[in-house]
Length: 27
Image 1 (tube, rainbow, N blue to C red):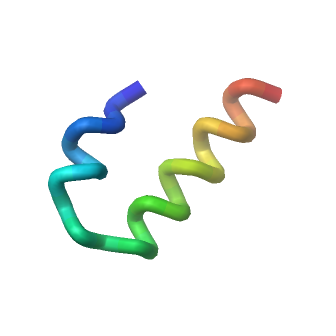
Image 2 (image 1 turned 90 degrees about the vertical axis):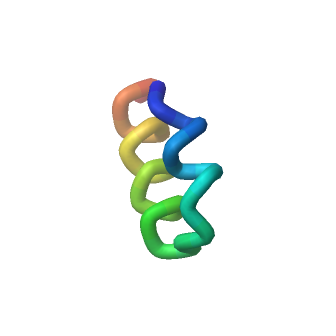
């Protein structure tokens, strides 16, 4: 999971999208 690039960029929207993607991938 690419969490470093997301954490680098201060984008709450992108962060939420990545979180949703990881949640769906885990399920």
